[in-house]
Image (cartoon, rainbow, N blue to C red; front, side, top):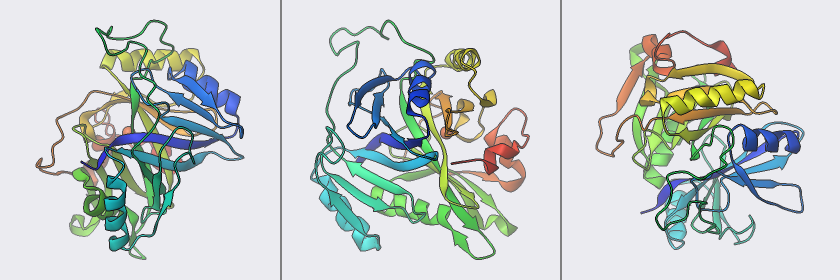
Length: 314
Ligand SMILES: [Fe+2]
C-alpha cells in the first residue's frame, strides 16, 4: 500500500520548556519520552504510535524533517528503488536512529526539505484502549487535538528564473510515493504556473501541501479537531494562554477546512483544522483556484489578503 499517513514532524525550538508547555497545554499533546540530547517526544491522545512530534533544542525555529509512515517495512526497499530511479539520492538509516523507530529511508524533496519514510514505531496505544472504548479520554488538556494531520511546506517559486519547486515536489510525490493531487492554485498568464498544491494518500483533503514562496521553509503543521465548535474552543484556549493567533477561526475555500493559525513560542506556525471537508479519492477531479480568487481559497469568508500568512514562515 505504500505511504499510509504523516507519522511525525521534527521541529526546532529555541526554548524546549516553553514549547513543551505550548504543545501540552494548548494542543493537548502528551510527552512520551525525552532523550539524552534533550529532544522531547509527544503524541496526541487519538494516536497509537509513541510520538508524532519531536521538539529539538536549537537557536532558531524551523523544520528538521517530516516523516511519513508506510504500511510494511519491505516496501521501503521498493520505494527506495523508485526514488533513486527518479534521480534522487537516498540513504537507509538504521533502526533505532530515532528512538523506538525502525529503519528509515531518508531523502530530500526537490525543494530540499528532508523527508523520512518508516514502517515501524513503538505502539503505545490510546488511553481509551481498543475494547469498548470511550469516545474520548478524561483529563484532556487544551484543544485536545486528535492527531497530527498534515504539514504545509513553502517551496521556492521564481517565475523569472523558471524555478518552481512546488511543481517539482508535486510531480515527485505523484511519481514516487503515489500521492494524488486534490487541489491546486494556478497563477500567471493563462494560469501556466502551478503555485500551490494539496496532495493526499488518505481520504482527507490533504496529507501534505506545497506553496510557492521566496525560499524553502515550513509554513505550518496542523492538528485535527472534530468540529467547528472544537475550533472555537481551541481559540478560547489560545486566548487564555496568551498564544499569538494570526488568523482567528474561519473556513478555507481550499479543502473546506475550518481553521485557526497561531504560533508556538519559537514562532513555528501551527494550525488546528476541523472537518474532513470532502471525501478525497484518487479519481476525484482536481479542483483549481485561479489567481483572482486566491484569497477566497485561503480564507473563504473575507477573501482578504493576510500578508503575514504568505510572508512569515520558519
Ligand atoms: Fe493546513
